[in-house]
Amino acid sequence: MFTKTKNLNDMNKLILSAALTGAATTRAHCPAIPYTPKEIAEEAKRAVDEGASIVHIHAREDNGQPTFRTEVFEQISTEVRALCPDVIINYSTGAIGMSAKERVAHLHTTKPDMAAFNMGSMNYAIFSKKDKKFFWNAVFENSFDTMSHVVSVMNEHNIAPEMECFDTGHIRNAEPLRDMGLLPDNACYSLVMGVLGGIPATPENLMHQISQVPQGAHWQVIAISRKQWQMAAIACTMGGSFRVGLEDNFYLPNNQMAKSNGECVEWGVKLATMMGREIASIAEAREMLNIPLR
Image 1 (cartoon, rainbow, N blue to C red):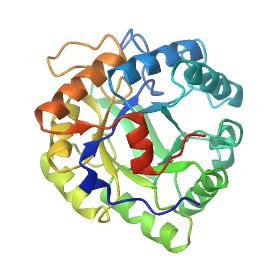
Image 2: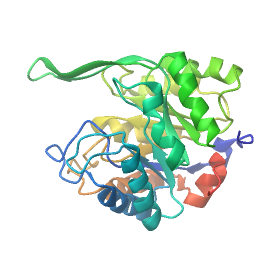
Image 3: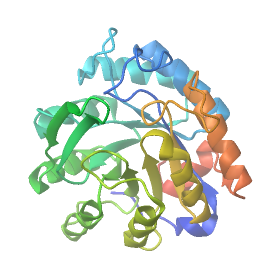
């Protein structure tokens, strides 16, 4: 288990995370989305060069289809480490229709620095207001049994849990896991907003979510779609961090479609700087989150 994390908000440096790929979108939506391990690594390098300390990654087959094949994650690790030796790699464990064991199989061999840890079950859907229909609609199952298995595997390999909280109840779900001794002290909170089935991305809701995070814990906001930048600005003023990248939002604050994840990070740095926040380097982020370089 990790040692106790410092009071991160006192350090006042912002950790920028970049979500490079996602699983639900394709190049038909945004031509810059990377598919292959080599493309993902190149996007990681662009993001790191602009100031990202963490890269959050979903695996894809070469044709863009989402995959949890361990071999693909291993290839991604090799390619990313070749271009970004010290970046904090954060792998997805979220999937629908797969067992908990299948969702974390890749963690045993890749041993990333961090992994997404989904903190509760929810309806997860994409709805078209224009067409008045669901394009995609499912239940994302994360029972306490599932969560216990997932975080136990993370603990086995000293992988920091990034607790993805899609609603207020998800933040509270950390409490019994902590009481059971399953959560390491450097588990951090991601306040995910704007997913249908989860909490809407509004300033009032974000302020409420922030108020639920335990004192001294590191948190970031992940806002889906174009409200990302408004939520990121609030995170800056409240002492938190935020995530950008093509998984969450294709568009820059000037309403132009991003040509790379590097562009998303570049604008994230601009926003944070304008709000008076200093960006943490990778080494500083590792120290703040107590994630030593392997």
